[in-house]
Length: 342
Image (cartoon, rainbow, N blue to C red; front, side, top):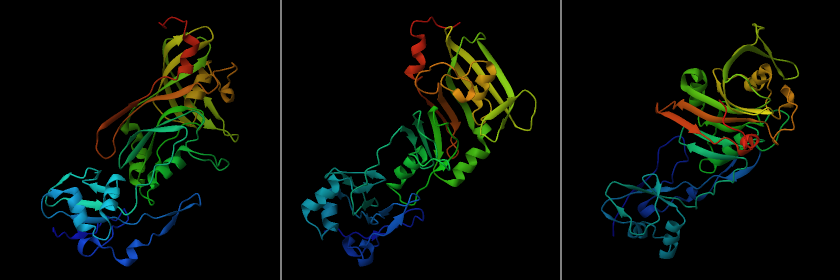
């Protein structure tokens, strides 16, 4: 029989694994799960810490587990494998005959993994230990306001990360308006959030939107520059001269047009609140469905604005990350019989 010593993980960011005696028998206090409260007031049980075993000699996984988990039956050990409770080199392993090498560590969780909560109105495009990049649907709030307590992207992603680590948090890096769809990013630590926000203009290489606007835009491309200032009614107003507001620059390129509608590619040089919506009104072609900023047409059942591309330098790895989504089908519908714009 192979003798193995289990040890505890010393990571300060996660729950510490159970310290065990010979063959992995947990101490009595380690089997009691603690409760933790989330910000929305709900309570969940803190996962029982896992036990880590060090491999002393080459062997297959099932015999190794049977040698160490002597307080449960053979069928129970097989069930632990089948339920994905065994982690080797940060990967879940379920194969009985997986070969182990001396020095490897085998982590055994006492409970099955928690199923990730279903997402509503968003999908995850990328996730690592530092960032989450999502595609947000139109109609979903990025984060709750003082008056809004609806489901938000922030709340759902918090539940997502806490399914595996109850202490994990996420941090807002930038926002999309409720009725704007597309790519957006959250940080998984305060340090990463601050690094991105403090170096936003240097870190973000491209932010490209598509906008469905009212009327026929005559110019094939152009730039809009103005100062934006928010009123007491929370509406942004634009001025061609410095009015004490924030300078905003928007570049646009016409993709398609009819007499009733134009489809524009819009690139942000700055990222001010409601910037594209205000600048399209300045252009004389408000975004379809945007009554707040001058729209009159019936529209396509939603705001005609979509964050199509987000490209940035990863704040930790330095790698260039680029995420691109399709133009919403409803934006293309007005041009189904129209020729390509020139």
